[in-house]
Figure 1 (cartoon, helix red, strand yellow):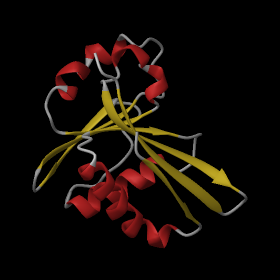
Figure 2 (figure 1 turned 90 degrees about the vertical axis):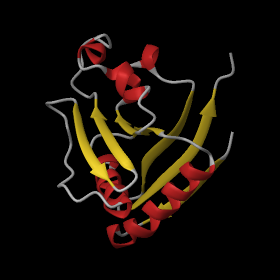
Figure 3 (figure 1 turned 135 degrees about the vertical axis):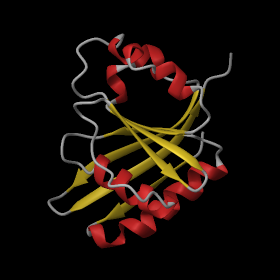
Amino acid sequence: MSEFTITYSSETILPLIARQVISFAKDQKCKVWLLEGEMGSGKTTLIKSVSKVLGVQQTVQSPTYGLVNEYDYPAGKVYHFDFYRLKHESEALDIGFEEYLSSNELCFIEWPSKIPSFLPSKYLKISITFVGQNQRNIHLSTHEQHS
């Protein structure tokens, strides 16, 4: 497992942080990113910044009600999931979640704790926590389960 933590207090440095996260994920060959953090911690904000750095031209927003948004970028597609409103993890199957995961495209998943049975064997976990009033920690760690 590889990991590191970034602490920041201003959203103005998010493009720099986004580049670091992208580089780390690329080095670790992780296309599935699980984003954890309490409501308002900055999960969607980080995804917006990462998407912009990747070259996504569309407006990136939380897919809370539709569960998934799809964006194009020069190297392929980004699938952005928000499972906050799921009542049962099987609802993820209704939108074809397994097909998205097997697409070999980037998948950003907010609230992954709602779908524990469907998580892939390899992923990048991004945990965002508040540190004091104006700071946040972004902790990155890779996970891989061997069969």
